[in-house]
Image (cartoon, rainbow, N blue to C red; front, side, top):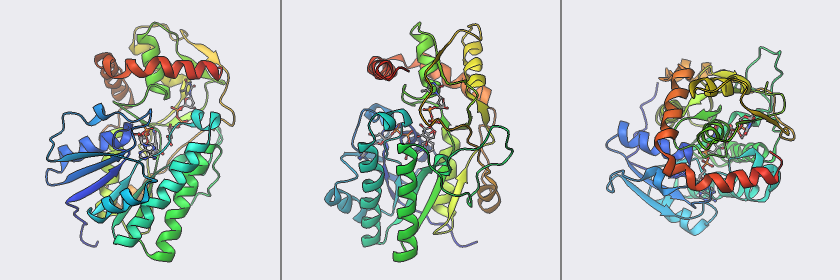
Length: 339
Ligand code: NAD
Ligand code: TDX
C-alpha cells in the first residue's frame, strides 16, 4: 500500500451541522496535530454551538457559503485537504422546496472542486447511500460501489449529481478526489427534524412520536463517530478516484427503532401516531461495506445499535437547551406538510 497522506490543515465544509461537527470533534480528539477550518453558512441546520468549546488554536470557524467562489478559492488555497459535508440534507424539505438543494448540493460542490482543481488540493466528497435508490424489503441484496445510480427524491438526485461532478473532475482533470457514500447516521447534535431526534424530543415534550406510511421502511444505521473514523481512513489511505461505501450492518425497520425508543423511555410500544407517508418514500437502504473493510481494514467501534440509541436518548435528555429552540419551528413545518 502507498504511504498515508498526512494533512496538517483541513477545510471542513458544513462543520456546524450534525455529521460535520461530530467529525471536527473527532479530529480534534484523535489527531492532535491537525488544524481544522470550518466553512459553514449557518443555515437553519448549522449551529456554532456544535463546535463550541474546542481549542481556538485548533479550530477556526469561517461563516460563508460554499457557492461563494472567491471565498472558497481563498480558503482552498491555504489548506492541504477539503472534506465536504455541507449540504441541504433533509428529504422532506427537498420535497417541499427543492431549489436550495440544487444550489448548495450541486453548485456548491462544483465551486469546491473547481478550487481544488486550481490549487491541486486533495478533496474528499461526503455522499449518501440514497443515490442508489431503494431495495425491496424481501430482497437480500445490499448496495455496493457498483450499484447503479437511481435516486428517488430531489435531495438524493442532487447528491447523485454532485457525485457525478466529482467523478468527471477526477477523470477529466485528474483532481485528487475520493467519494464515500454512507448510510443513515445517528448520535449527538442531530437536528430535531430527523427521525430519531424527532421521536425522542417529541416524547420529552409530552407529544406522541409519528411514523410515516406502514413503518416497515428499513434504514441501515451507523453511529456518527464510526462515519468519522471511516472518512479519516479514506482521506488518508484511500485510493484516489475511488468510491467507498460506509455502513455498519445496522439494518432496522422504522417501527422497530421507534419501539426501541419507546421502551427505553419507559412508554408502551404502541404510544405513537401514524401520519401521511413521505411521497416517493424509499423502502429499504442497505450497505455492503466489504471494500472499506478489506482495503483499509476499517471496523465500526459502535456495533451495538441499542446501546448507541440509549446513549443518544440520554444526550437529548441532557441537552434540552441545545434542541429546544429549533423544536417548535420544525414541528410547525411538519404540521403544514400534514406530517
Ligand atoms: P446537516 O443538515 O445537519 O448539516 C449541514 C450543514 O451544512 C449545516 O451546518 C449547514 O449550515 C451547512 N450548509 C448548508 N448549506 C450551506 C452552504 N451553501 N454553504 C455552507 N454551508 C452550508 O447535515 P448532516 O446530516 O450533518 O449531513 C452532512 C453531510 O452528510 C451531507 O452532505 C449529507 O448528504 C451527508 N450524509 C448524511 C447522512 C445522514 O444520515 N444524516 C447519511 C449519509 C450522508
Ligand atoms: O417523523 C418521521 N417519521 C418517520 O417515519 C421522520 C422525520 C421520518 N420518518 C421515516 C422516514 C425514513 O424512512 O424515518 C426514516 C428516516 O428518516 P430521516 O431521518 O428523514 O432520514 P432519511 O430520509 O432516511 O435520510 C437520512 O439518511 C440519508 C438523512 O437525512 C440523509 O441526509 C442521508 O443522506
